[in-house]
Image (tube, rainbow over all chains, first blue to last red; front, side, top):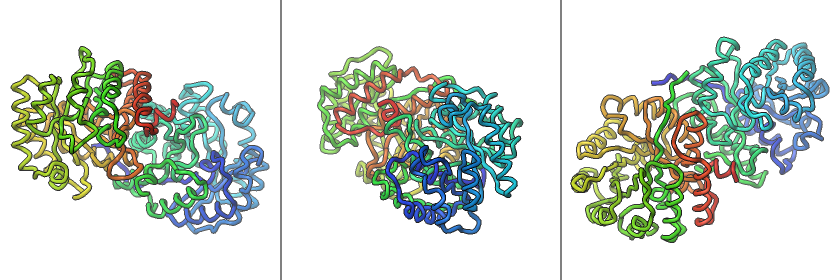
Length: 298
Length: 298
């Protein structure tokens, strides 16, 4: 028999990573109400928005109002993504608990996404991380396209390691490895984590899978065998996949929590609360969310 | 690192298990054309229909015409399900290559499905298997509700073993263990196969998962670790789930083959051919099939 952990941490990225890929604009007060519902569900961590220029992601232009409007529950880390010092300053002014920074393991995806080479990105993030730490904020890093890039295809494991090391050297507390386009297969996840084991502290690694090809939960299983204990999810599968029309994007938190809990692995998250919160944002978006739980329980 | 096999066998049950849960009636000539397309995709095994009374499953009332109309390719086993001696006789008259028989591990599901107790079912199947063997046909058994029953909930492992042993004692060549309502979780699959290991010959066991909760591919992964090498799929996820409206049913063969091939595990099945055949039956049904591959590639 395989060995399974007693508990894992599931982090909710729907209000940021999910919503940023949704076209229907959600009102600020509805986002606040939704995040307050998520706070009731038992999460430790909710990424509430992104302090990027509104031109980049109009959906998240109200990051400041959201951060100020939500009810902060004790024991929950409310985090926000920032791309640069300007974003950090606004985020700090709202007193979010944690900052997240991001870059890509792929040169061309990084360039396409933030218009900088990887080398040009490092000093920008370094300054952000340093300033966040001065302000006593924990920092989470995201590396995207770890398992494949829409422009370059395969990304070498050494490249993933190199980017990860640079981010840890800056002082980030945790690193989320992203399968941005949902191409990771379980064998590849197995090989990747085997490679990283001993080179990075895997207790500080989170996995961020997309379910584009239906393999996200299988990839979670393999990660559990490599002692990964932190996973990202987007409630209801919110977010879609910008690279494949009609395909699912982010792994649905409700499907992730359901699998883990059904296996006897504790997440601390209440599934009935999750479904209520998923139904709420589904109604606001006016479209059916792709998670299995939302279909089974409707 | 985990160990993965070089190849596995994927068996197509869509024309029987998929279609029997679809309401839109498919014309006999379209079924024949579809099965001929499947024959081009590289399968070893296609279950083409079910010789049951038309009152039970009107969709499959043309089993005889389908069996006689398809082009039989060398190296492919064309199988059909039969519930009793009457079905067997008709099936034998069409000279299908293999017979399948079925029953449930759950007393109430068996009763509900075929109006017989488990004890009453054994002699019926025994006669069918015996007669099939006299006619030099291989026989496959299906046991449904192995991982849970819609009426009874949990099914004991001893009950699963007992039913399996009875079927093997009758002389079946292979047994497909079905997660009929899609409730199996990877921990449960792990425990079940650990329990059965040494009690049954696992090289003769196929796993038949449903993707109702999104866990089917994760369950395949665990089964691979227990040396299971045969999996059932229904192309495009054809079939839906009769117990949960809008939820997916059978594991989609195209998602299964995609995961296995992406992991470097050979199936012998051509994915482009699969998608063509899936599109064909999707058009005939006039509805979007739920597989991830059908969404990613559209």
